[in-house]
Image (cartoon, rainbow, N blue to C red; front, top):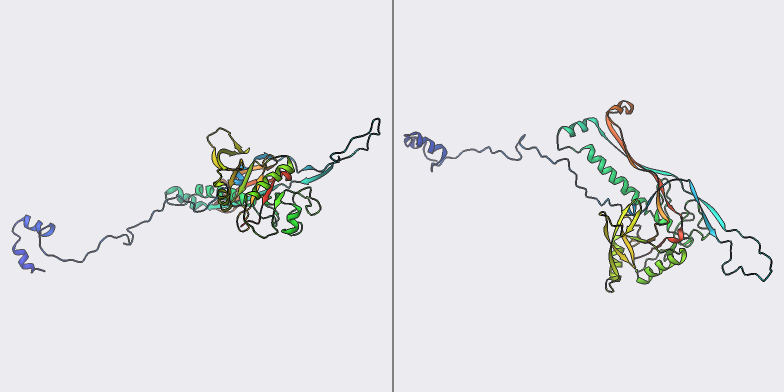
Length: 365
C-alpha cells in the first residue's frame, strides 16, 4: 500500500477526496464484512403453506363402483333350480307332476364404518392464519380426505385369504370360488356375507388360478375368462380392473392386431358409463370391447391380477357418504384440549348380488 502521507499530498480539492473514497486508482485494502445468506438474523427461509404430494393416492376402483343407498341388513339369493332343465313333458291326460322348489339362501350385509382422525392445536391454527408459511388445518383436512378414500380403495383389493374384519370387503374376495379356497386360501377365508364356499359352488365367481404357480398371461386366458363369465351369468363383464404391470402386458398382446381401442367413459355415483356425454369423461383402453381401468392397488402375484367385473351386480352400498366432522373453538371445553379435531367417516359395505357375473385371473408373471 502506498504511504498515507504520499496519498494526502494529492488531496487538494473535494474532488480529490471523492476520488480517494469513491473511485480512482488509489490502492487501498481493507477487511470486509459482507451480508451473506448465512449471516445471523439476515435470512428467513419461507417455504410457503403449499404441500406437493409425493404419493399416488388415486382411487380408481372407488370411482368406478356405483354407489347405492344401504337399505337392508342382507339379501336373498337363489342357489339352485327347482326344475331339472330339459324336463317337464307329460303324457296326454297325464298326472300333474309334484311341485318343486328352488333353493334359497340368506346372505348378511354387515354395516361397517371406516374412520380416520386428525387434529391440530389452536396455537398452530392461529399462527397459520397470521402468516403464509405454516402448514394449515385446511391443507391437513384436504390431505386426510384424500388418504381416507385411498385407504378404502386399498381395502377393495385385499387378498382373498385375508378376512375383511372391520374393513370393507374386497373384490378379490368377491371374485373367489370353492376351487380357489381349496387350493390357495385357508379354510373358510373365502367365505363372504356368511356364504360357506367350501360347502357349495353356488357362490362361485369365475376364477382362473394355477394353484399358486405363476404363468405367463395369454390372449386365450383373457378370452376364456370373458366367455366363461358370460356363460355362467348371461351377462358380459362391463369393466376390467388390473394393475399397471399387467395392463402393459395386455397392451403388448393385442398391439400387433390392433384390437385395443380407446373409449371415453365417465365415472361417478352410477359407476363407469360409456357415451355419457359430459365434460368429466376420461379416456381408457378397451380390451375385447370392455373398458380397462388401471388401479395401483390391485392384488398381485408376480404381476397384478385381472378382474372381470359387472357393476350391474357389484356396487358399494352407502349408509353414510364420506363426511368430514370437525370441532370448532366452542368445543375445546368438551375436548378438554386446546385443539381442532376432525374425522373422515364412510359407512356401508361392498355388495355383490351375483357372484357368477364376476371373475378373475390370478397366478400371473
